[in-house]
Length: 475
Image (cartoon, rainbow, N blue to C red):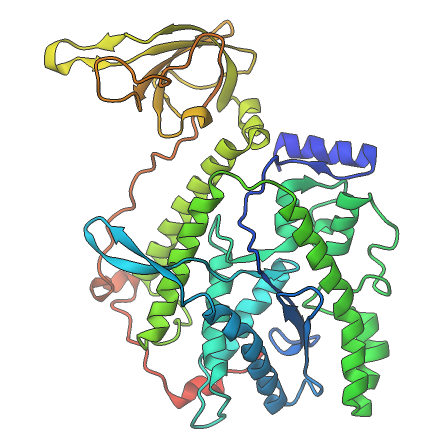
């Protein structure tokens, strides 16, 4: 937790209401998100009990497994889920655009993409497990399932994996996104309670926020008291209507809270870099759809050595880029780096736009800018710098001391002998510079999967579907 977030939590506790820790929204919010609130059977990892989902807050779809320990009813429930979710996902595949790529063939990218919203990170974990439990099933052979179930599993696995990708908005947990934008006066563990967190943001802490009779848990686990006193007797009675009504009482409050969270996030202006990250999401979604259309097998149970290393490298680069973009988009986020000395803001007091280095053909334009700042600067001379005011421009720290920082602009000034208008800050302008830049080193070259060395398990075996896949336990 950063110093500013800790301070915001203390202030929230003192004032009795959550404090904003962001000025813009750092995630994409779809105009038509699919809100998905799942419940699972207590004591099992991925055995579905019920779910409410939909894109219309006034018309939710309630799906219930009336006998949760009946295998056939579980997969019938999964087929019902597929009947709602798959048309939503596939509805984004008809409108595409052609994207040209350097040193690669152009490809078709969807103009928009689906977005799944779940209450909390546990909902993401359940979605991923539910995907694993269904994507290897087959409509023929032993333990046959409806045709749509394996396809549903592949998409659920994809959304669950994409949720772990830094900056992605294809699948979001409401508590996680609210916590990125507001600081409550309770602990991070308590922020996982959607009702309690929303209470802090909207009205301040409420005594009934953690009362399971008023605000049932947001899932996927249900309240033990409800399990023992309501659900178990309902299941024993064999009454489908009684079971359905009992589960409806657990899901409807969270359904309302989810749309309240959507409204709160929608009330924030979108950050400047969000659209770029959503483009990457659209490209990833289009790639997944193309793999399915081409008949590729389901995602492997575990990655091979090369695939795992490649995935880790992509995620590390995405995390670094996400941190830079959030800071550049949001002065409140950048303020955290100013406190640690990794960034500084101040007023330009002197400039030398014509300063150059070298002679003759090696002469390079390197304007100098002197900034007066009250921020602590803990950066060494020669540190590469970037600025939110002129994205894409590069600079270098020359010296810092006595509240004055001299920087040298190294790129983003144009190709002429003089800087392009506006490239060099003017005296009196307020600027911010940071060691956070998006000039990341490329990933190390990895071998082809077929060349995986024996020290890492050797080349992975190609996945071939077999009847044994259907024997994996649901839970």
